Image 1 (tube, rainbow, N blue to C red):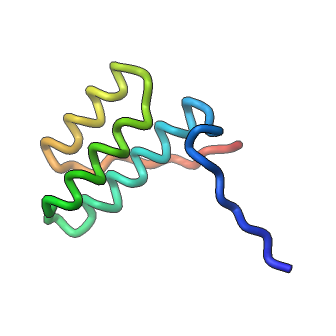
Image 2: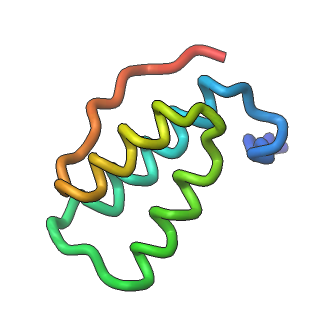
Length: 75
């Protein structure tokens, strides 16, 4: 039987939320074009993060459309 690996955002640690938001941003920015629907997804991804400094960093990444550097996360 296949195991489902779904984890609700509410159960993620702050570090996991930051990584998840960064990953969503990177995926949306990957094609170099951001549609209005994608902007809404970007804002939702940023809302997962509670640290104001990280939120600002993610907003700058979105504004300049420069994909964030992703590193592996453990846990």
